[in-house]
Amino acid sequence: MVQPLLIWYRQNARDLPWRTEITPYRVWISEIMLQQTRVEAVKPYFERFMREIPDVRALAEVPEQKLLKLWEGLGYYSRARNLQKAARQICAEYGGELPADAAELQKLCGIGAYTAGAISSIAFGRPAPAVDGNVMRVWARLRGCEQDILQPSVQRAAREDVAAMIPQESAGEFTQALIELGATVCVPAGEARCHACPLQAFCSAMAQNKTDLLPVRAKAKPRKQIPMTVLLLHDAERVVLHQREQSGLLAGMYEFYQIEGKMSCDEAVLHAKALGFEVLEAEEELFAKHIFTHLEWHMTGYALRVKDASVAKGNLCAATVQELGSKYPIPGAHRAFREWAENHL
Ligand code: ADE
Image (tube, rainbow, N blue to C red; front, side, top):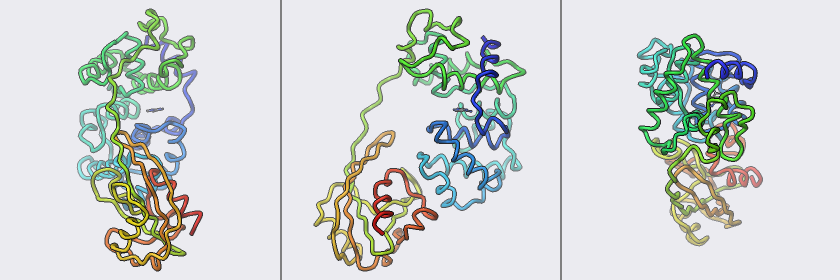
């Protein structure tokens, strides 16, 4: 299996920024970005990140707000915060260089079995297995696995099986080849391009005509739906932002002021007054929805013109439109409100 796979990879690998120049730092950052985000979306973020934060020491020292701003729009912001924690660990415990060993890599914040295997094999040529969701799909089809691929025991079996296949001389290419196959050929149900697959002669799902039925994945629980009320407190130049707590969902990010629950416009005005704002006019009602992994925000927004937005205090601050773009990291969940502010201030 390995030779046809490597030959296929050498002929078909996409030209990606983290492949043309391979360093441990670049592999690490790219793998973290790629965990929940598509390749095409990651590319510009990766290039900009490398320009702004070129190495482990720079990452350890960058102000958190700048780091989150560079991550703005990628989502799953704890990935960025964990990167910085890991960079500090690398400086304190590994002399500023990423370790090569997968078990050592797994001691770093935000690095699990997959990422450790990817860095160890791609950046250091070590024979460590790297099995993410895409590779799991390839493996489940190849082996005809009908168990739930989210079960830890099935994932362990996949890692062991993949580990036993790794060629000593081409561990990095092998890892990337499996990832590439999962991304471009052995894609989810209905779209798989089996005719183009270098492993079709070895594939159990192909032999049994089960490609579209595999992998098997347990049904996720339905997401919790949370009504939210967003107050766009603004004067002619500034809009009020709230910095979220340093832990939990969207930790440390800035959002437009919001409260859980659905308020009427009158209730929103009273709430704004209780915060210390003098409300001159309630202008507009806006709706937006955002889907996170485990929950959804159903947001009702009220644009409230106030006498002076800069009376904001504590975790609140008043930002100009220019600062929304350059200074404060704002999650995609509030994009509609940000656009409102950009169009009305
Ligand atoms: N997805 C996860 N890791 C990847 C990589 N190194 N190249 C392309 N897609 C990926």
